[in-house]
Length: 316
Ligand code: ACO
View (cartoon, rainbow, N blue to C red):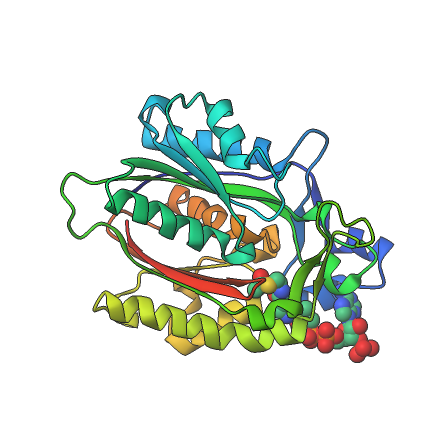
């Protein structure tokens, strides 16, 4: 069961107008093509680890769970502070979790769905009773700030959920997760670099049109799978909490599902695309402002570099 929610956004906000002072772009272009108005960008001392720890602490506080009860931390990130130790292991230390295990998941923007699915598997196998799942990203670090095609799309932030095994597994909890990957599409969205390869830039590169072309179809079939495997239909869904890449992709999926936008949680206008952090950030916002309530059926979906994509269906 998902019992805790938390998030963290850096204080510093960068508006589209501010970006258009540095790049040949405009608020009108960015809003019209993506729905993005602004993004949060890390300040001094803010990192994937620090944001993950803040979001996770808030999620534990929400759930009223002591660090001693946590068995594992899984962090989805493509922008870890270090290759190792894993972000998750640093977070275990920050939160004072003495007996847990932890590791990072690299599945780009689908990372949170992959991490949630992994946590569910550990719990179902009896290997953990309480898992903190986090998405934490510092994309501002890997953007080519001279490339207007990508620099305007992303933001920084972290979100977390706490998942606990239920003594009475019934209607509530993670009902289904479905994961996919296709390496043949690896060159339409990737990071140009790796440690020890100094001739590469370490920047994100993207063919936006190609990503867009794959997105709506793959996401729609991933949510179809989730609903079918749980024996449910679109009409049963209380809320769609999609990965927040672009309002046009979000609206495209909602249209295919015949879900009115009033039942879709949207944060892309204020957060931009925070990759693996976007779904838990949106979940936290909608739970805390009272939109998403206990008993609601929540459908999540994401697609990202790899390509990777997937869905998760949860009864809160
Ligand atoms: N400001 C002004 N003009 C721009 C900008 C900008 N920031 N960026 C690109 N342009 C220009 C291009 O140079 C091009 O100009 P030209 O016609 O003179 O050559 C024109 O706008 C059209 O460029 P396209 O790339 O074809 O624009 P498109 O309509 O495809 O929109 C966008 C680009 C918004 C990136 C779109 O392709 C998209 O949303 N793709 C999905 C990608 C995405 O969401 N990626 C996030 C990571 S993956 C994920 O999270 C799902």
